[in-house]
Image (cartoon, rainbow, N blue to C red; front, side, top):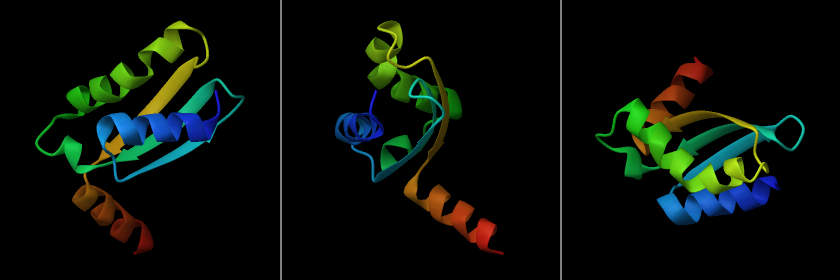
Length: 85
């Protein structure tokens, strides 16, 4: 599955501010999702939200594995500040 397809799908369905994706071989993805749809939602529920969007592609074999990191906009800004220090 094409990275831009995954990115657009996630942004549209979850109303995300941004998505960063790396992939190994077209089936193994590392995804960072950023959006305020994650406000006041624990990590497990955030994972479920992302998986719910991707599940059909996982079941169909287009995606084999996914590593997901999710952030609100403020959490992302804080994480970026920490990386710059």
